[in-house]
Image 1 (cartoon, rainbow, N blue to C red):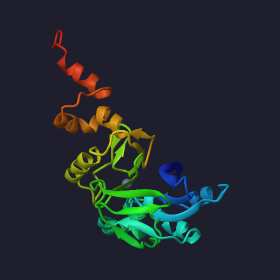
Image 2 (image 1 turned 90 degrees about the horizontal axis):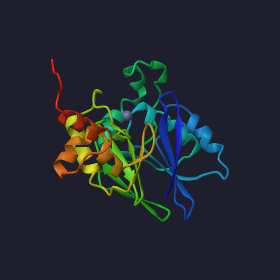
Image 3 (image 1 turned 30 degrees about the horizontal axis):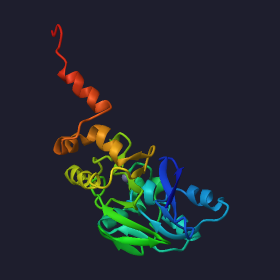
Image 4 (image 1 turned 90 degrees about the vertical axis):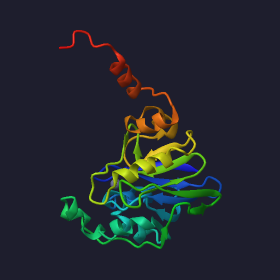
Length: 237
Ligand SMILES: [Zn+2]
């Protein structure tokens, strides 16, 4: 499939337009918190043939503009089942994050989905991997080349686990599971640049425990940090 990112809104969240190249059928992944994405997608020529709206998780920057998207594209919408408690807070999530002007009605979810769910977008099979921790039900969508990870994993970082419904231990397990997928997968995160699973497994400073478990040598920043630790300390005071 083709993956086209659209970075929108005050949180600079990455939303995505997925296109099956054979049929031209499209899916939108995540929404931003305003109607900016609707405007940018409506400006495309040719107009995208939108068949689905998919959510990675229900934080306001990823799901807050669902009503705007659904007003334009009244298509089946999918959200992780475990995310429902957070999704239900959307009408007052702005208040929770100190921005009450962002409070608004939550959109409509047609399908609450679980780990292992698969969806056919034209001739592309999209699979869902549940990877909670940043939120109760956060998940990832992937095919044979690409994975959209929301706020689970970033280039050189991982999602925050200090929010009210976060769980750091679950996050550790989810990253272990995510990093078992093929390393060539291109990782499209909810914020920041694209990376690959192999690059993150080799260099991400938050994945040292996985390198230890698998006997993988670090490179990049983590390797330098280890070299420094191993150096004799001259003239230590
Ligand atoms: Zn988030």
